[in-house]
Length: 171
Image (cartoon, rainbow, N blue to C red; front, side, top):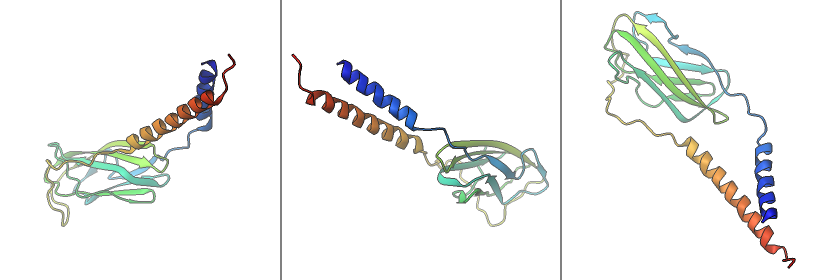
């Protein structure tokens, strides 16, 4: 039993040590419209620029009107280090809040919360209004990591059991 415990501790220690230092994560360099800015007319899109490429899986952006309606239309477009979210009708003047969740290339989630103000309401060109009851896509990126770690631990335990059972008894 001591050997099994020693093997399990050694395997866990090897897993922890082999992970190495964390890589640097992507950082937001700029957002358009800028945080805290005031604009006379509504923008047609929100653009986030990062210091390194980001992934498209799990990327979610909401642009909420002063009344709390999400005016983002369609899926965000990711191209290297730039994420673009088209917006629809901005019929209310006031403060719009941008809430974004982007996953960096190394899998680290990045959250962004900014706001800008529109002084004259209007419509974005050629954009239909957004239905606030439309459900948002779920993000399952953490589930994959948890399942992978569970499978690795299962293999380690199975190997430890096989090693212990193969050793002849010294009784």
